Length: 195
Ligand SMILES: Nc1nc2c(c(=O)[nH]1)N[C@H]1C(S)=C(S)[C@@H](COP(=O)(O)O)O[C@H]1N2
Ligand SMILES: [Mo]
Image 1: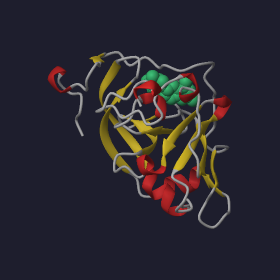
Image 2: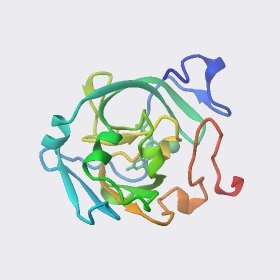
Image 3: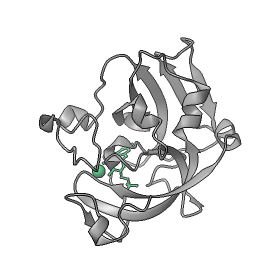
Image 4: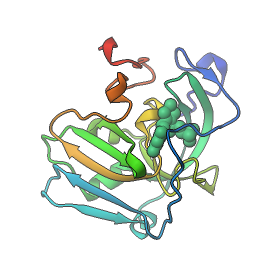
């Protein structure tokens, strides 16, 4: 879990930063938890659409995990204590069709990240709503963001509002600018041309 606590254990090509400055494109959306929903659609198992409300989210089993945030631009924020619901739990509520191995996570105001369903089921994949015991700030993604510590930060949309399942690979914002479709930190998958 503690994968960037000491310089010696930083993933390849990363450097530690101790000031956690938010990084994103565009203006910070100010969202209310009461109005927030996560829409789960696309190639679902039953063909339907599920809408998860803030109430639904808080009623699911809550988890905390310590994980670092590794940005593909090479800065790493070490050992953040995230709180939220495992994405596994969310997938169990609205599972993908078995042939849908791809997913797109979309944020308010247009940002999206393409991921594998397999990476959503990773034991540390979280739909986070808090950090260090406090609610996320607007800058860091309130009311909810995806956290997948084994992938570069761009795979974790802040202000997440939609999850869709697909049979074919999708393109999110960074993917369409040449970044890696999978983006595993341990394999240093930064650029698409690495294969
Ligand atoms: N909606 C949205 N989510 C986003 C981004 C963004 O631009 N918009 N940037 C991503 C990138 S590149 C990183 S490294 C992390 C940064 O999270 P932080 O600002 O909390 O440090 O958020 C990710 N999630
Ligand atoms: Mo990033």
